[in-house]
Length: 295
Image: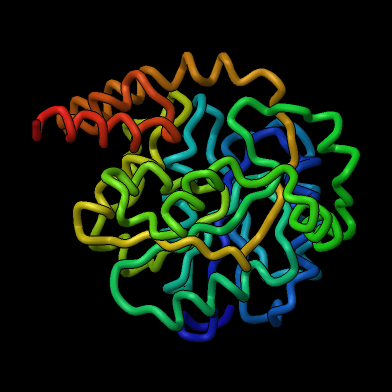
């Protein structure tokens, strides 16, 4: 195995019973423009009972790939990502969700960003087709070529369709997210990079979020922000969110428990307003609340 300094980036992918999506994600990594011998891919299996391990074995001849399995004890994505962090060899960590298909320059763009920026910074990759409510999935699926992600991305970009659901706020701030009152609400791990050394200062994912869906990444983003961490949009680190969950209502119901835990851990106006809003709505609500208190 290569030494710590030789691995330019560690890509951490948690997964659970989504072997088909994992296949698509790993396939997109094999098509990266960067030398694949300089990156490691860490797949952390949250107790799958499907053929996830077989998919991993399929790509081991193409990628420097590690596989870790934890027993199925319910939704434990915070624990899964922490396993990946603890076993990583690079200071540059890239978190990718299973089912996110990377454009060929995605990993190279993340690495370039961190090699060019010192201090507490995190890079947000662009995610086409990503929508909280999974709208128009049939049309989206018809336009995704899993064997040529770049062509699909080029089509989305040229037609300005299926844009990242954060695009309206990106445009509003001219990509200057740190001007927002709660930029931490964009710290979402579907396609994001951060230095391992930054996490050593901020702390890893809080495993008390395990058992319920959501918020564990935003809470880490909150701690990162309070330490002075800055978020930047990396549009060249582009990707596609392959639709896979047509009904998010059960996840939103489950998310309430983790929102409550977040607010109890850090009681403030931001976390209180987050109890009754989506991450996209939060900054507007915080801004209005600040205006009211300043009058």
